Image 1 (tube, helix red, strand yellow):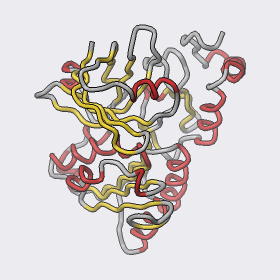
Image 2 (image 1 turned 90 degrees about the vertical axis):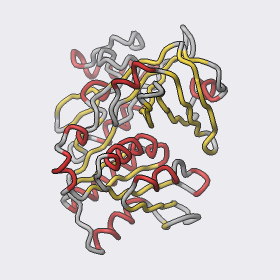
Image 3 (image 1 turned 120 degrees about the vertical axis):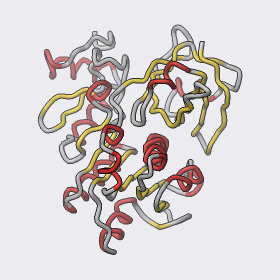
Image 4 (image 1 turned 60 degrees about the vertical axis):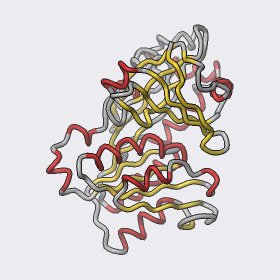
Length: 292
């Protein structure tokens, strides 16, 4: 069992939990994720690691209520425990594998949308701890839905807050701020965008036009986290990839976002899963047991 040390509601329907998971905390790196279950028969819920404390042996996760499983999870309190807390899963951010001195010479831009702020934070924090500065754009629909602003402000080189309704910070989409920064002379070597699929799609379209290499972190439906089930299948550069083992980070300019978003909707129904199994044939995998 994995004890919850801290549980709090960050804002409407978005929650933070700090969980005792020493083996995960010892091995994890920014960009990786975990899969949790509340009980033996519970739903598997994939969550990107928001923060970790190797000395205390804890992992911090942030999640939004999007269905029955996360609604039930939101009712857990400090002192409760998860039945399973599996990880670290996925590949770490490419940044942690680069030479630090080379990173210090790069101009790095992070773009976070909504709950995507949670997986952006550990990467920016890791860079800050290694003496690397990065600009960060955090976008939300309105001020009430912003999360981790103070935490991000403490580690970002420059932090730009945007809200769709103009209730706080800059008004408009994150893409508008990217254009403003570039128009004002900013030159970025790489952009890392994490958030809703539709946000990452339009950020990638813009950065391709601006000739800024871009990495996105995909969060399609995941079931087993080992590449067996095929739920998180995506097409990147005309090649089939599985986000849980080949990602979650991919070249944003090569991801077929339209296919990924359509597939994510289809996978939610039995009829849709049957359609995908028939269409994708031998490349579908299907070990999740949900396609029969």
